[in-house]
Structure formats: C-alpha cells, structure tokens
Image (tube, rainbow over all chains, first blue to last red; front, top):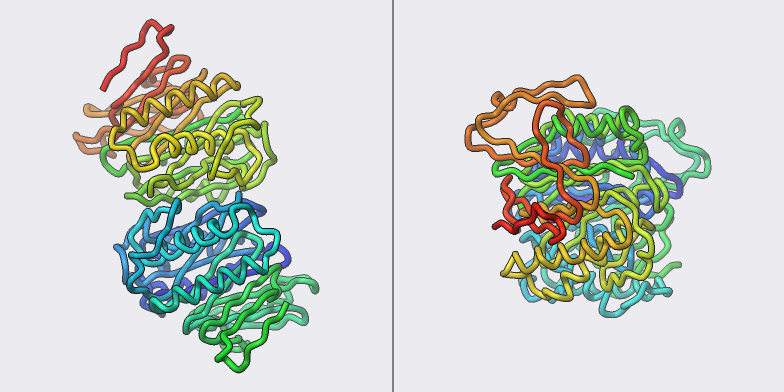
Amino acid sequence: MCELLGMSANVPTDICFSFTGLMQRGGKTGPHRDGWGITFYEGKGFRTFKDPSPSFDSRIAELVQNYPIKSCAVVSHIRQANRGGVNLENTHPFTRELWGQYWTFAHNGQLTGYDQLETGRFKPVGETDSEKAFCWLLNQLDARFPEIPQDCDAMFALVAECCDTLRQLGVYNMLLSNGEYVLTYCSNNLHWITRRAPFGKASLIDEDVTIDFQQETTPNDVVTVIATQPLTNDERWHKMGVGEFSVFHLGEPVYSRVLESDTSGEKKK
Amino acid sequence: MCELLGMSANVPTDICFSFTGLMQRGGKTGPHRDGWGITFYEGKGFRTFKDPSPSFDSRIAELVQNYPIKSCAVVSHIRQANRGGVNLENTHPFTRELWGQYWTFAHNGQLTGYDQLETGRFKPVGETDSEKAFCWLLNQLDARFPEIPQDCDAMFALVAECCDTLRQLGVYNMLLSNGEYVLTYCSNNLHWITRRAPFGKASLIDEDVTIDFQQETTPNDVVTVIATQPLTNDERWHKMGVGEFSVFHLGEPVYSRVLESDTSGEKKK
C-alpha cells in the first residue's frame, strides 16, 4: 500500500511541515520504501520531484523538505509497491494534459481486473494498476467532455462515478488535481483538515517537529491538507467515509458526495 | 533566445559537468535569466527539474549540479523569454505522452505565424511558440502513426519534415527525446561532440572547472553531448548545418539528414 498527501490553499503555501511527516513513513516510521513523488502547481504549470528510492534518506526529498516551494495545489505520494516494478515510470504522481490543463493523479490501494479498462488515447507508460486507472479516468472525461466543461459539477459527478467503478475493482483512495481543484476519493483511508484563523500549534506524529501556524500565516489564509492517515497528533482530522468524494478549491471544500448508504450524507456546494 | 543541452549515452551517465557550464549562462555568463529545466530519462520514466527563476543562483539547479543523476537521455534548456510570460507553464522542457512513451521537447529560437498550427488533441497549456510547435509536431506524428511505428526511419523522416516546416516560421533549433532516441534539428546554432575512449580532459568555457573523463568513465562508454554553443574550449565540437537533422541512440549518431543544398550532405544509418 501507499500513503497520499494533498493540499489546497487560497494563497501559495509551502507544504514542508506535512511533507516532513510523510517522508518519515518512506522507510523509517513506515514501510513505504518503493519511491515517492510530489507535484506542486504554480499557475497553470507544475513541477514534480520524484524518486524510486526511499524518501527518508533521499537527497531530493531533503531539498523539498527544506526549500519552501509555495503552491495552491499539491499532490504527493509514497509508495509500497504491489503492482509494477520499483522504477521511475511506476512512481506516482502521474501527470497528463487534458483540455489544455495538466492533471495530476496519485492512488493508494490495489486493483484487480484492471487490464480491461479502456484508456483510448491515454496510454500507460508503466505497468501499475494506478496509472491504468488514471488513463481510463481521463479517457472517460475526454469522451464525455470533448471541450473543457463549463459545468464543473457535472465533471465532478462523472469523476465520482468513475471512482465508484474503480472501487469495485479493489481499494481506491485517490488524489487528483488540475492545479485549481483538488479532487479526493476515499475507499477506506483518507483524512483531511482545514486550517484557518485563529491558527494554533501542531506537532507531527512521525518526527519531533512542532509548528506554530500563526507564525507562518496571515489571518486570511485557508489551507486544507488531505492525508491517508493524520499527520499531527494534536489537531482534529476528519475521516472520510467509504465512497466519499470531495473537491477542494482554494483551501475550502466546495463539492462533496457521499454514498446514499452513508447516513451522514449530504451534498454541499 | 535560449540555450539547449542534450545528452545521449550507452550507459547511464551524469551530466553534472556540462550542466554546470550551461547554468552559468543562466544569468551569469549569459543573459538567459528566464528559467531553466532539465529532464532525465531513467528507463521509460523521467524526472524533470525546472524553475522559472535564473539558473545560476537556483537552489534546485545547485542540487542538479551536485547530485549525479545518471541517465542515457537528457534534454535541458535555459530560457531568455520572447513569446510567453516568465512562469512555470512556459518553462522548457515540455513532456507529453504519445504511443505509451513520454516525449520531451526543448526549443531555441522564435517563430511567427504559429497560431495556425493545428495541434489536435495535444493542447498547449502555456503561451509559448515552442509548446505550440511541440504539440503540432506530436499531432503530426499521431496522425501519421496511430500506433507506435515499427519503422523508426519513417518516423524520423517525418520529424525532419516537420522541423523544416517550423523553420519556415523562424528560428527553430530543437531537442526531442522519447528516452531512447535524442532527435536534434539545427536552424542556425547547434553543436555536438561524441566522447569515447581514449578519454581526455576538458575545461568548461563558462566556469573554472576541468574534468578528466578517464577518471569518470569505463573504456566502453560512448557519450554524445549536444549544445547550442560548445561548452568546452579544448575539444572539437561539430557545428551542425542549416536544416541538419540528426538522431542519437546510446551515444552514437544513428540517423542524419542534411538539406540537399548543403554539399556536405549524406544520409547515414
């Protein structure tokens, strides 16, 4: 299995604190030794740092922890390989262009029977179930919306439906972003927290680091962090339900869909 | 204008020495202050480091200079912006997937009348003439070869033709790679050198650094470096002719096409 980390913020924000926690799980406090990656959006562009070697002693991961790259949308992943070899082409996140936007994807879980997914013009380069699922998802979006959709809700609804389909094939926790929105899907393990004024302090679970967000922020900052497991032990993280799909925009939850069988369900906009 | 740097090698080789020379031109010995990027292939995967700020004082460029990432195919670029703002989405190299391969592109030059290029399903994200040309080129390849071509020479010939067309729109020096081949096109400025045993010493033009390749290599290593301008002052670089198209594979030139009006022309395989 793997761990996911995502961020959505209303001002460019660095993710050094959360990333430091996650990276310890890449072979030190956690078993995810088979590579890691992180994608930062800046405007319509992005940059990805990735490495098929363990994150906890990676020179590149060290740079990312210490060099504050500020972004409004981040997708990150550490890997414990199940499908596909340990190499760069199988290392998340994956990025492809659709509608003149870069879409970035990371997956936690394992699928079976994914060979039959039709990916059309989006051909996987590596051998993972995850990249195949991503290509299939983009192909579904492309088929339904040949041009960039004006109705974002319709697009979100289709992504949620596709995620439901993929969950039928196994465990499917997902982060997906086009740099503006961060889309999340929970199969069994995904948590999120929104930090806003008044900001407090927080301590990492995986490393002896405490941060005082008040020192790092302005009163109008809104930052949501999404992670497989909570990264701090002194804040209240929301656990997502089975089949819960949420979209974050500029730090705020803007769209959510829970399965009807989940009694806590309501759609909010 | 900009500067290009590419490498093709028969064993995974680091490009720290050449990259160190190029980076000085990013705002120190050269005027290319508007960003830089480098893509390393490793197997079918790749990683790109890029920054819209000047390379000579970039923390990330410093990492790339000092952390030897070994690769058989590299594409790098430093930018002096003409078309498109100074931001990440306009920073070369650009990478897109075609035929289940990642293709990476960098361009030196300036085009006019490029708005009319039809890019089909490959939609530019930024505003540069370069990314538009890349998308058009991929669309031409995709239209002619819906599946991965078995006849590489036919594919190379089409790329050369496309480059000729783009050169009609202005200055078009290009590096293009799918991780296996490094394809080059010269409009007015491109040089290359192949290093093989017996290896000697070389000194950078832009920085007081000398390397003894014999200490860094094994006798069977073959490494070709392609650059806008020679990077060393004590080796013989080949200057490419106008309209010259060459392909390098595992460090060796494997395909070349010069224009008929160029009397030095011959096609070699």
